[in-house]
Image (cartoon, rainbow, N blue to C red; front, side, top):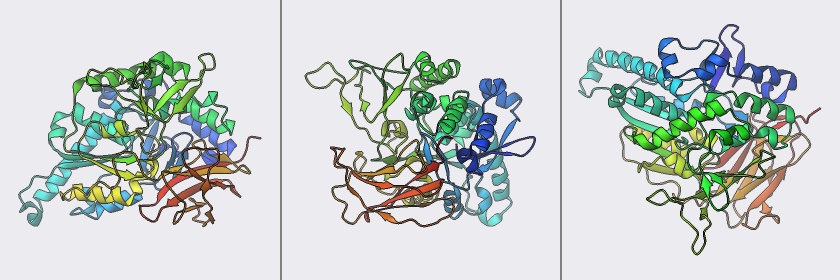
Length: 473
């Protein structure tokens, strides 16, 4: 969701430009409604992209300002990573940003990416050949893809569809990519059944998400639905019951099955994975008649035969906290690759994380990999913020996890839109939690997008964005 979208006919911004579309009722309803996928957009696939690409909405740029969405939470702009990558290549023209219409199917966008990447590589090879000092090195230029979140799925689709492009790829760097899907996508489809507020915003987001192939392509393909004595993979009927679209879900889940079976490997894959953040990893159905999906912060293991690992001396499945970046749990972001760098970071802010940027630069420069920046075991400092945001006048509960003491730790909140500084908050043991969590309360004095910063003094500060809106009329 990190690409700016606009109406292709009128040029009207639809996404990623003005936060008023999320905070002001008269604006948000119209813009969110305009982002609903029509029938052609729902059915668009790789063949559509090859024959007649869609033109109703266009992606114009990567995000240049912070953004936010219920459940998926904050998303930082890509300015820092573009600057970081551009600073280590021969010429800025070696770098080509690829914005895409994230509403549409991954397969559709993968075809467009393959075409764009081939054209970019061809242009760059021609330029290198015409520059004697560069051509003297003798190495034939190849591609490096740097992809965040869904972008990694789009890269995989592009390289699967075009084996010659895969052969011309030296490395793929994925940052927080949900290769196995994210349970949070189900919660986004289930917003109408949560009682969340403000109702106007969650109603608009859920109605939009239910029409989008791109959101359905984030559905978890692993065994995640906790039935008590068993754990099942989601079915299209489950997704429809939770507020999604059965047809879009069936198509997406079929792709998940294909990926489990085909064994495709990204060339030169390096995964940067956020860990230690409180992360929804599985789902439970609170009551079939209520159609409410409840997120759970634990996952389930399977053995070499694909059978569930059971708790010792019990028929119940063994549960464990696999950790993650707040949106994607560790097993999904690793995708079986052994070249993993772990960082303590939130999903939407990973592309500004110093450790992630340093690792990206080292891969591009073909330097040795940095050592693990996290522990790789899911333990460490974590930041927890309200995933549905807040309303003016109501305190936000902000939590720091994985810390033994508040000594030397600071938690602060400031405006992400104006830069207006806030005051440090006091962290205390949360009496309602038994896991030693530290928490603080923050009450906003104006509707805004706020940046929460947790600094332990020992690691790169953790950040997350929280939207505070006016209450329902």
